[in-house]
Length: 80
Image (tube, rainbow, N blue to C red; front, top):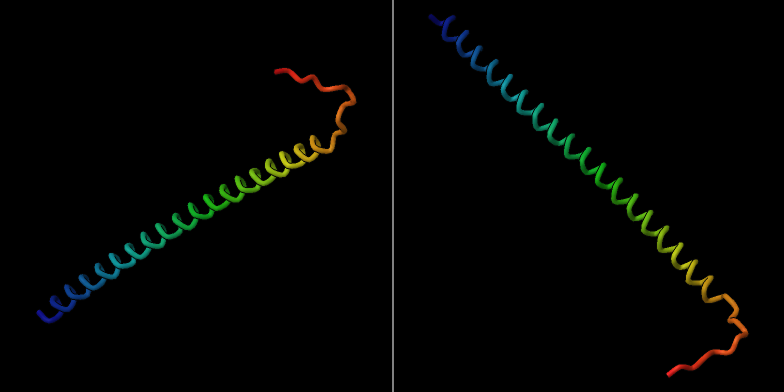
């Protein structure tokens, strides 16, 4: 009788250990997925910021080039 109680307790303990290990693995998997998703979002954000910065610099360069053009020597017409 003592052996059966003991073996039953050991089985329950082993089942609890398996359940805890499974929960830990699931938690670790969820954490890893979150980390990967955050890294992907960060990479996308940084790429967008770089593209926006490049577009702004190009627009600034075009504006500066327009300002540096010499005005034409033709007279201006003043219309009402």
